[in-house]
Image 1: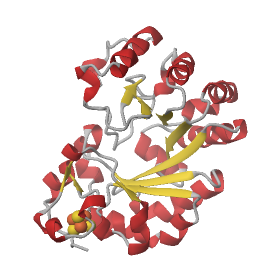
Image 2: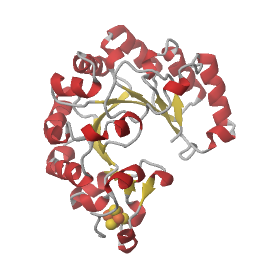
Image 3: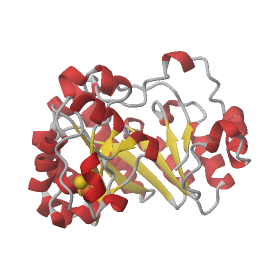
Length: 290
Ligand code: SF4
């Protein structure tokens, strides 16, 4: 789905952030409402600079940095909602600004359906979450933000858990926290991407897909207890058969590879395969045709 970058700075410094590659080069980019509106019009007209992203018509990601830090954020949400009626907008956020109840209420009023807010939780404790974000107090703010959004009643909420070496053993406890804090909401569990800061911190974060998939498999019962759950970046053959229907292909073809063994696999068409950057680091072994 096309990405609409809303802001290029963030108040978290997440160790695994994949969106930091172009930050330094883009610090002077204009993110005013007028410029964002102009970019969207370019996108809608299918201009070359945006065409590569236009794979899934009718679904858009509002990304950053942290989009809520843009001084024009609320106006931008209202503008995108008006300009893209009926199309699904997903805001990717660390959730911290919604700790302000007035801000959460104003956002909720502007984010009319179909609209989804996707917030990442990195741990089940302040110690773990704040270690990953690099910001003391971020866990408490994110949880307060989630509670305020739920109290406001909209938009739809999605909780994301990005697994790496620092937190994959805690997946069960993180899912329990998600269930307690945001009952009935959608959850997405994914292996981290070797991009941006995530690539630079590989020595600290790296873990095999076999290990994170095993952690996911151990949580099968918990995952099935969510109203909706999805798994990103896991080859189907590493997942327990009962979890394979939750696996989604979320990366474009150029970012995925299929080892030679996959040519004998009946699930090749629906499988995410291996992330290209992961395969560069780990090689292409470990998959088993099903
Ligand atoms: S063998 Fe290849 S195509 Fe089949 S499930 Fe595993 S990674 Fe996917």
